[in-house]
Length: 355
Figure 1: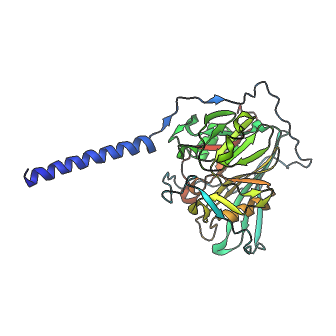
Figure 2: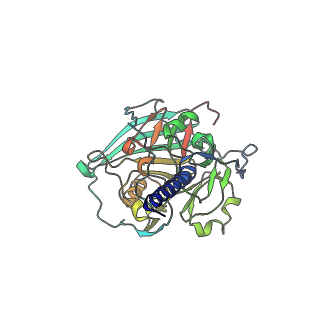
Figure 3: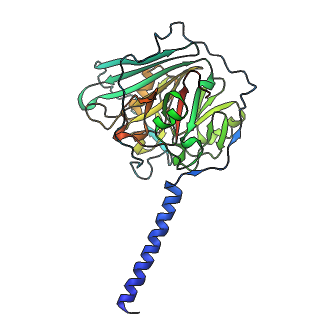
């Protein structure tokens, strides 16, 4: 074979290989693929009496914004940082620095943003700023008192469970008439991990991340993957299950170690759900990668925030550019880099909505 023909054959083979690789990436990582399986109902609430939770005696004043700071990301970017190991897989035990000297908290400023009280729920949303300068951390807390666990719902991007199904938190919130919504666990970025949403089981394969379960009686618990099936958790009245982690608190105290990855343990934007008591929950979003406004939080710093918010249990959800909070059609926080499209949200519906 002469030189020119050899080069031509080599170029053709290279192009074929390139097309094959691109086709593989396109199918498995880019194109939305709706799962034909609609899931299995493991908790039929139609004939169940909802657990009735009591609201605090002192309600919120009004139902509107207190000190409005509406945010709209400048762009949406679906690229993830960190390379291999930046998700909720290949986890290991990493010691926390809970005994380290805490930063100065004298510079703490809280601003109440939104409140609502309609007889079925009470919600306070506030902004907190810790520290100053490049060490500043800014985070947003939604303090939720609900009368029924069915008010705490989840939703999938594009309205369906599947692979590469993505929308912004704002788009999903609008699709489902959400008053308040935060980013979820990005189940679509993993091939394994239990997925239960609103009492429907979509995926039953256990991964290697800690598993957060919200039961129909309003209690919340976190399980190691090794014990989840052994304890028969799916045989109980399970309302929601999230897979990302790690668990941050144990009986209200910062854990000695986190089951996570080195990348996730660093300072990052954060999103998490906290449990105080049945019917009382907290959504917390920490902004980051924005020097002077908010540097983000390490896993220990995030755990300390959740502890200071009064949570007895707290669970870390997908963070980074995914971390976002929406109130009544507007972003509350400033998603890093303009945010990105994600696969799911956790939300509270508007009064009168069907969901």
